[in-house]
Length: 433
Image (cartoon, rainbow, N blue to C red; front, side):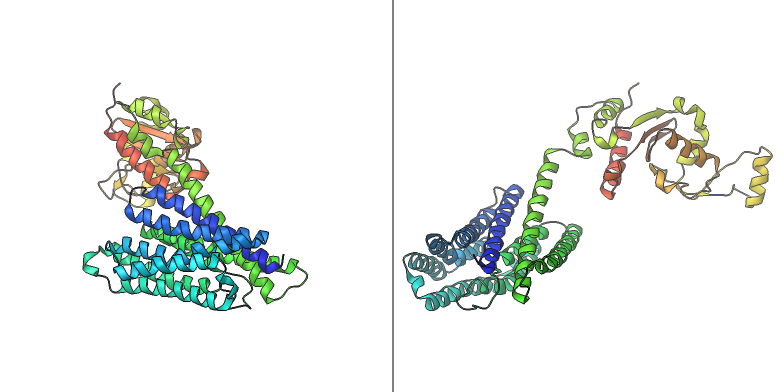
C-alpha cells in the first residue's frame, strides 16, 4: 500500500467512527424527534460510505470499492430528507424524484461497472452531489422565515456556513478529477461539521467553550501531525499534508468519543442538585446525611451554636450577619480603634449592607476585613481545624454551620453555584431536633 492509500483509509475510518458517535449523541439528546430520525438516516448513509471506502482502500478490495458508490450516490437524497425536516415541509415532488432516481441509477451503475468509464462517471457523480447540495441550499434560502422560530433560523444559518465549509473537502474525494491531491479530505470535513453541530446544540457559553476546545484540538493535532511527518525518510509537502490530516481526523474522533462517554457517565451519576431533588429526606439532618454520600460533601460536618463555644458565637454571628464590613469601629480612626481594643472596649463591626453571608470560601479570607480581626481569626481557626475550604451558613441566630472541604478536582464555578443552591434548600428544610 502507498502512503496515500493508508492516509485515505485512516481518515475515512476515523470519519465513520466519528459519525457513528455523533449519531449516538443526537439520538440520546432527542430520540423521538422526527428531525433526529431524518438526521440519523443522512449521517448513517455517510458513515457507511466512509466505512466502506476505508475498508476497501485498506484491503484493496474491488468489490467494496464498487459498493461504496451506492451510499455516495444517496448523499443528496439524505441531505434533502434533512432539509425537509428542518423546514417542516415537503420539497417539490420533482426534486424528490430526481434525488431518488439519480441515487439509484448512479449507485447501481457504479456497482455494475460504470466505473470503467472513470472520468465521465466521476464527473456525473460529482455534479449530482453538488447539484443536490445546491438544491437544498436554495430551499433553505427561500424558506418562509416567519414560519420558523428564531432559533431555527439561526440553526439554518449555521448549517449553510457548514455546507460551504465542507464542500471543498468533499471535492477532494474525487481523485479522478483531482489526481494530485495528497489525501482525500471528505471524511475530515464531515468530522468538522458534526463537531460544530454538536457544539451548536448548547447554550451561548457552552458554544464558546466548545469552539475554543475545538480550535485547541485542531491546532495541537495539526502541529503534532506536522512534527510527526519528519519521522518519515521522504518528507515532502504531500507527506506533511497526509500526516496532518490523519492527526486531525484522529484527534477529532477521539474527542467525540471522550466527550460522549463523559456525558454518558455524568448522566448516570446524579450530581448534588439531582441527589437533593430525588432525596426522600424530611428533615435537615436527614438531608445532610443524604448529601454526605456525594463526594463534595464527604467531609461535611455540621456545627450548631452550642458546638461553637470555643469560637465566640456572638462575634461569629455579627460577622456572618453582615454583607460587607469596615475594618474600623463605628466611630474613630484605626489608631483609636486599636486603643479601644487594648483598653477592653467592645469591638463592633460597621455594616454596609443588609444581606448576610451565606457561603464562605477559605481562599477569600479575610473576606474584606483585616486578617487580625477577631472574627476573621476565629473563622479561619474553625476552617483550619476541620481542614475546610468552605463554610455554609444555614442560620445566624442561633448559629448553624456546615464546614466542608471541596476536592480540588471539583473546585469550579458549577460547584460554587451548587453549594449556594444546596444552602438555600437546607435552610428551607425543617430542622427537627
